[in-house]
Image 1 (cartoon, rainbow over the protein chains, first blue to last red):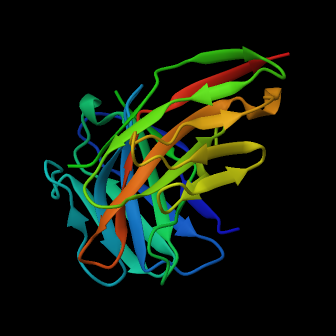
Image 2 (image 1 turned 180 degrees about the vertical axis):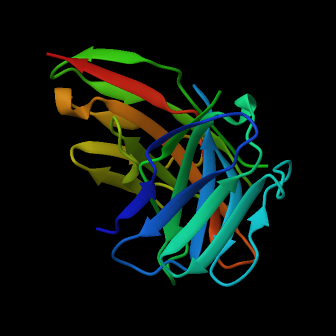
Length: 116
Length: 116
């Protein structure tokens, strides 16, 4: 099946620094990738939709200047958390949609971000 | 807007017990319904899906029936195994986004622990 990887799996950073998380589709091309945030005991919250070669579409309430998304190729999207603060600590999950498939998304294993 | 409500966990069962995880939804139109499973340390995987009323999705011994009259999509398995221990997410995809894909709305997840 389609495989999506994320790197790093865990990252600890100091408050005020920036962190980049990579999401890669390993065996398929993904014109659309999604970034989610998962809070403890809460559902996945869609943060933004990333389309290859164009600007990301952010959900209401998500700061686009804080969560920078780049989808430079058909197999790679990156999420950069800028000037991270402890409240940004969370589990970030990406998913990728196979081109032409209307609904099925393949999820990465997630990245645990801890901001100290 | 769309929403998914699923029973809070954790659910602890003995091996070979019967499993039911309740899921109800609110959506306009005719959404597609999904169950995803997240094993420890891994990303979400699609477990089963149903795209129209009265459809039954099934996989790996799990099944769920799309009940439009009760807006439910309960997950069941007749005999659980230790290897089924994971977090289960009910989800729906609703009205197509302008970008041609359907946004997925997730429930909060239910942790299942199966003990030998």
